[in-house]
Image 1: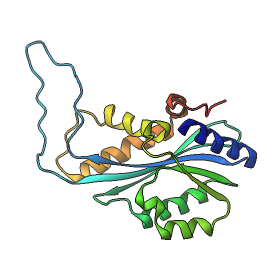
Image 2: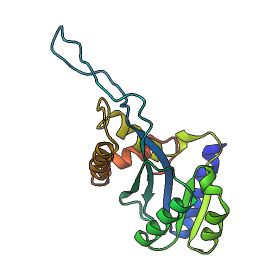
Image 3: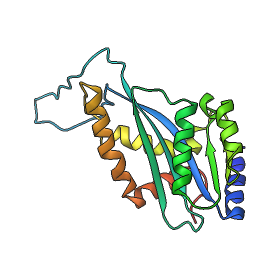
Image 4: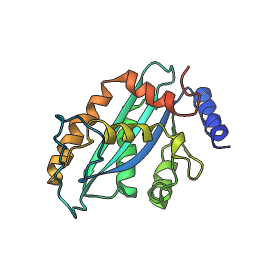
Length: 198
């Protein structure tokens, strides 16, 4: 059912010759995601980390497919130790519309910030933005989830951070590298169980 709904939005984007944009938020924590690693025989790797650290870097990102399906693009913003709210969502959408020409079909989840009255009013005042929601509990349909999974399990895994500034700098170093890797962005889209690529 969810795939059929999103496929309908894809068709709408094609009819409008619009950018198809997926948006999602995530939190990057001080405690690292641990993965298997290499070490000399007989030397167990030890990972030291700061405990009871509840600080995080909130991130908001959009993965877009152009009307001609040439090249996917990734747009993101980082907010150290802040939760994404309606005002930050609007600020991100405002910047996104500056980057994309023509109509935009945006698909995102049902986060409370996305359904806030302020956000709805702002969307109504921007007629070239067509907004739709993913079905409930369907993160696998959103290709941006693959962006977060890649960041957390590859460049940021096994990397303990002892202060928020180090976490923000590391995230700000690796997220832009994804922007310069269209084949990887296309892989995130193709991994999604939707026929979004030609």
